[in-house]
Image (cartoon, rainbow, N blue to C red; front, side, top):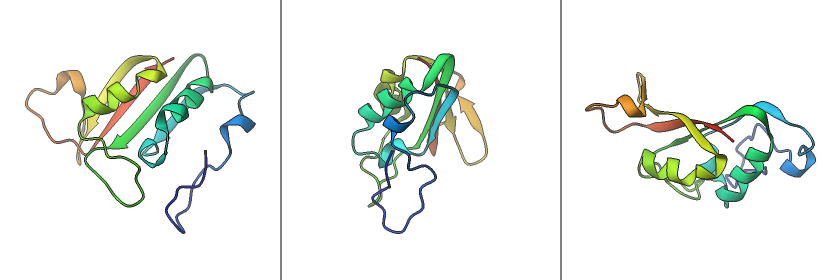
Length: 122
């Protein structure tokens, strides 16, 4: 992982993946990260490599948000899920609204989420 290209913006973790590849974790998460990464496919492959057997990868990203600090903006939750398939098998996906989380497969009539959160099993 590396510094976000946004000037003077703090980054929680700046440890390159290659320095921790010898470690495995039960849960590896990236909350609102993939839109900031130049090559998110490589990022996801590295992230998957950090998950121990039986563990989970959890990813969230905003939808329809493009700023000078983002490399991409995902338009719909389905675009995100298709992009994250490199993580393995989708366990659950949620649309995040201002006041609630809604499981994607139970959305009946709810539209325009702010973000999407998905849980994967590599």
